[in-house]
Length: 340
Image (cartoon, rainbow, N blue to C red; front, side, top):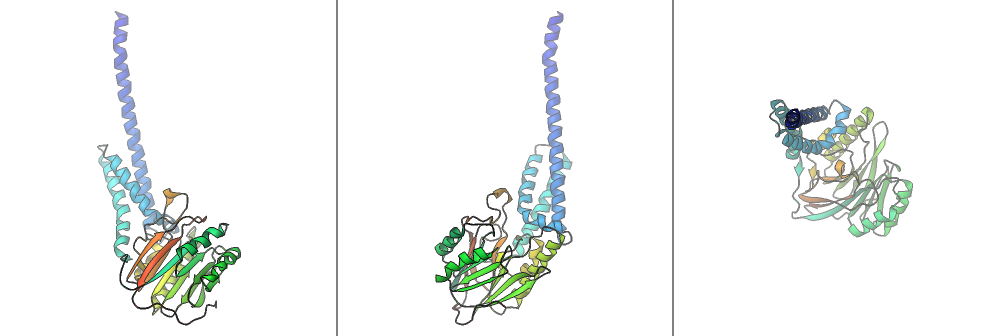
């Protein structure tokens, strides 16, 4: 009889233990979700404080990632009847969606097609340590743009890119090294170099007969001083673009995304984003979970334009190509390339 009683209680004990384990697991999951939402809200707060905290400039490029995380976490909280969790999820969703929606609404986005004359531009951060010179030059020859712009152009890179001279007889380069910039054009231009910030980084202004091209590569906002340099550089870009009486094309690795606070001066003056730009994956190659677009071709005065990302050329950045449409002829008839 004792044996029978014991055998009868065993299933009850197993059931009790199972319910306890299930309850503990739900408590752990609720705690984990709550902690994840609090961390996400903290990241969103840092991003919002970007104008005052340099760390915000490092977080804001990942606003889309935060929005995806908030969406997934909000969906998971639906499995729990916890008002606190639901409130945190709603706050995280609003905090992530609001800044993304605001930037998408205020940016000047171009239609993909329109009447006028087309100008094609390819930009590539070639990566100073990249030794796949032939892959880059082959890409340029295959794409055959009207203008090719590059950054991180060391002397070795300049020597290899200069072999494009049969296609692009007019060239420009300044500040060889990690922040070196270069441009190769089919038609002549007058070049001027501005030195920006305490580190005197080069900013190129190429003036053709009827348009201006700005070539840029500012510092990444990796610490307080560099964040200030990045903002000063982008503000200088905006001033140069705004004062031009001709259509403007801006090409470069801006170390900033559409969501970055440092891009506000360019948005404020009405720089235009080609169709498909802003949400592309240009960096870092091989790590798609971090995908952001910091390589940009923007314009001012265009009527249409589209942007696409080109295949890997051995750099940690993908090249990008923009096909822009302007009203009126764009034949350049005078000018000499030189560095001042």
